[in-house]
Length: 153
Length: 388
Image (cartoon, rainbow over all chains, first blue to last red; front, side):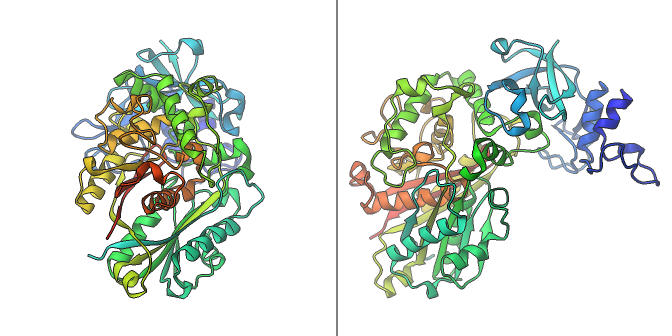
């Protein structure tokens, strides 16, 4: 999995020491600190979210809970599975997803937070709300970029 | 507080005009607005201009001074960007400026050039109104986002594709006589039902088109209108704005749009009216489901009841509450950065009596415009009234 994390972590992530970048590791593009680590953690099966003292959930990068206004937010493990709350089968996409069509985009409820991603591993005709799914990181068919994917448990 | 009057309005034809530059589109709309207003350009104190994707479509940032120049104006100019509500906030800020006494005459409008990008390019451009990290990278498209809202609505309240097809058919019917509309043609419910899917349950005729166009208005203070003996019977008497969480995944209820509710409450209070006082509305129907969501969050229908409004004929031209007599975004077209201003243009003409569909609202004195950005993370509502 470390190999895949190198692919996801384009900014060097936590390993970024005083030596600075290591060109070539993740291309020359700077990444999105906070988000990249979060996606890499999901890829490792160690997904997390940010929780306020009153139990509201949000996602990084974040300094203040958008629901409670608390700045005292801490990482909590993301529940292993979620439930599809709304889903659509997309037939017309941007060029970034042209070769992925048709695909199912879903908002999935994990309790304290919801996540948006693509449902795979189920016939598109049969994708429905209420299905229990688990998150993983796979690749976009069109560009090879990392993609948050939900598969039925 | 001074009333703000609409002294003049102008629109370009909305449609697929890929070769026309943004500056030329805005120049045309503003020229028509000044001709309509009989206001000299040197009296304009400020230009508020809406635009969303100019950097993508024309490789052109810093558009406000360019558009002031195109419109023949020599005054401070500012571009407002709020996705598809860009021109709505430009109008709102213009209203505030006139009301504050800071200026007697403000020019306001918007422009979007889109079709030169092609369908895929424009789809990609529109997507940046959503959350890039958590939505766009997960394959969310603009129609896809509204499709999720539609499926959430159907789950919560019921409703069908056919109900949505009635919305499309109604708005296309309203556009037939509107010379500025992209699609001046009727579409039957059957034809709308028989279209290819875009993002289920939304099909081709559930979606507003990709459109080039511009809109402009000249807003003046009551005092200025009186001193210059202007014929400006319609005033903007209420303004409101609301904001919601950017990403759908962070909203409590995908079938409700709180930003619209907030904007409406603010605008109604500002105008000292109730939802029941509204006689006609131009609402942001970028997708058919968006018209349904708007009518409910605007307080014109109870939650779960607007889905059948078009089917029952209530929102038709001859119904109790005509909605989108212009043809709406669906048939008139949706040049995103111009839409909010174009709704105020259409409502002004409907209330003045010089719109092709004014006959449907002969005695109407009070209408609202509703402009939304993204998946209604932003919303702007204006109340227009025929003043004495």
